[in-house]
Image 1 (cartoon, helix red, strand yellow):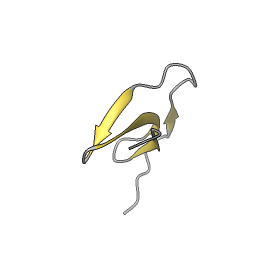
Image 2 (image 1 turned 180 degrees about the horizontal axis):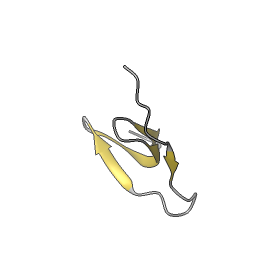
Image 3 (image 1 turned 90 degrees about the horizontal axis):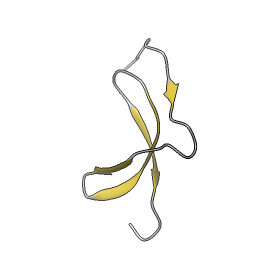
Length: 43
């Protein structure tokens, strides 16, 4: 799959906490179709 929309980054200290399929982490970047999550310790 291709996503031609721009990739946007969250500021380092403004990343929201998210839960994806029961795994918690911080959202790092996103586009219209995809998201990059940094996994939290202990998840």
